Image 1 (cartoon, rainbow, N blue to C red):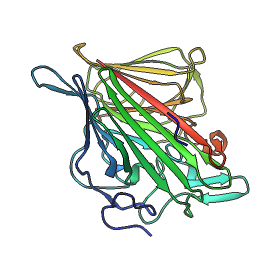
Image 2 (cartoon, one colour):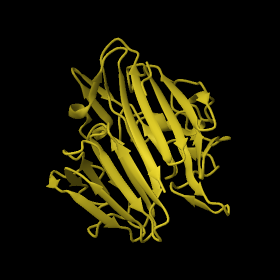
Image 3 (tube, rainbow, N blue to C red):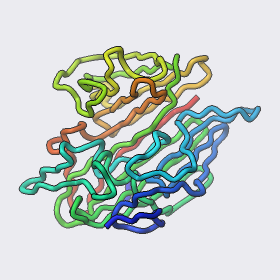
Image 4 (cartoon, helix red, strand yellow):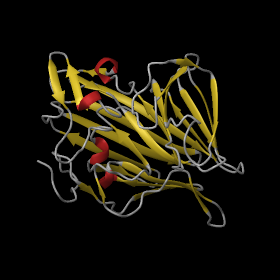
Length: 320
């Protein structure tokens, strides 16, 4: 799809400007198709707040960790749902962007303790279209000292009987070129016994549990399988892998099969060049994050978006 000073209180729809310190879930947009149901919270960063299967008896299986109803700090969001990352993904080193002849500190104070995942997940989005199966949200972000470009983003969430499509775009409305990157960040349930399989050209592992950056060691791989023990990715205490897109297919297909064999979720993206896989030890969630640039390397691995141009990212989640 192509789309041509901090406030101490909850933000209101359509309010551009600084990041609010608190986000409050409101009445969600509810989508349904066949046995699948989804909910979207425009007031909480355009977050897909629930994705579930309801069988004929009324029993519900949640694929994503559902977002609760309690207010939360915009800088300490719940590990739930799926949110858009923009105008870059993850964190810039030292919260600093080196852009041509400029050095820009990208952290908003006092609202944010870091620039992790950009600003889209911290803002209130406008609902511009809604139907029983689809909604479209818009975020208009004027230039500010932390990001001196005016951009407009759109997020569409479309549910069908086989799964959900999320389409994210960002358009540069400023005259100068803008560096940009996009990502989508789902939190899947990851109970003991669940199995993840995916193909990759190579992976870069985080050096330790506490590190957000890839190590310098690139490991060529093919098919990878991980079985959950209730959180974590490997026995060496590393919580994050950074996977390159497979050379042969040039797209990601990462599948979670849940114990019992009744349910599965497959994440697909043809626009991403990286897939971040994240699961801290002891935390039963798994993040599969398609991204357009490498974590920590935004200075060299971004897209350059000229005035009026648009960068796009899509993610499809097929469900059984």
